[in-house]
Image (cartoon, rainbow, N blue to C red):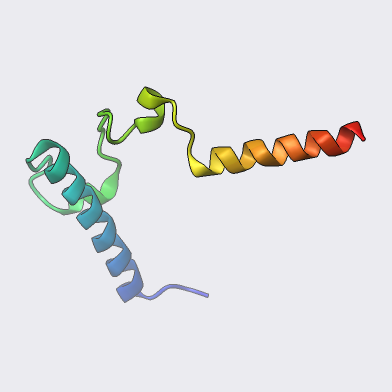
Amino acid sequence: MSRSRAYRRDMRNRAIARKKRLSHDVYGLDWFRVDGAYSKGHIGCGCRLCKFTKFYGIPLPYEVRDREYVKQYLEEMNL
């Protein structure tokens, strides 16, 4: 099933809005002159808010889930 132009446009606008909001909240300024530049790549932020796992050692939800899966698998293998 192919996506329509309206769907792609909406997804692009969502990504732009999220990245623009992040740059305003963290730094209080625009990183790019035009909005389209926000949709092209990631905004290179290395602050403690954006990379909390690196600074605080808190695992992401998928990492916790994977650890539990591996632990359960190893318990089954030992039986």
